[in-house]
Amino acid sequence: MSEELLLRHCSPTVIGLKTANMFVCRFDSKEQECSTLQRLNKKLCSKGLRIIPLRHNEDKVLLYLYRPSKLKRDLKDTQADKLLQSCGYSCGNMNLCIVQLIKRLRENEDFPHEIGLFLGYPPEDVCGFIENKAQCCKCVGCWKVYGDAEKAQATFEKYKRCTELCCSLAAKGVSIEKLAACY
Image 1 (cartoon, rainbow, N blue to C red):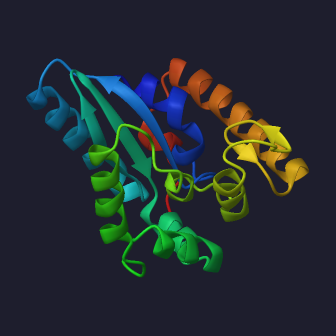
Image 2: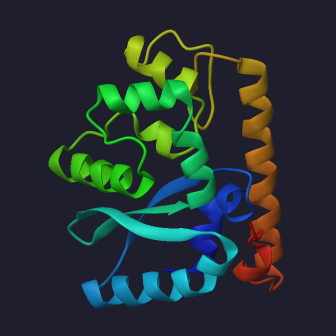
């Protein structure tokens, strides 16, 4: 897996604007997957980032790049905590919540809707998505918006500009470690 692929899908998380991103990657073998993730975690852990596999499907792996400090804060939100509790999560322990998310992803073909909370989406939008069965949103970008559409659209634009800039800088030789904001 190239760092270019990681930046194309995860630049807002890499530089610290966003809690997390997910993307699919192909690996030739389990050994390649393990060595790649180990190499990336070695580079990124000191920058406050982690990358882990969430689900495997043949030769594809759903990867999760996240900032533990931001995720811990996001999951403490009252609305997020209430939603996770209603879905059976053991709130109060971020790592256990991730393990439970992985279990839910691996046991079900569909994505659990609460996954938006693990990606840093506003809890009101995650709850709105669930309550409205993905219908009647105010706008769509990185996620479906049910709350503050103006703020969300500004965020979508910021993420887009961030990705363009990071990919451009990486193409000029700037390393992912230099792009990663340290928290």
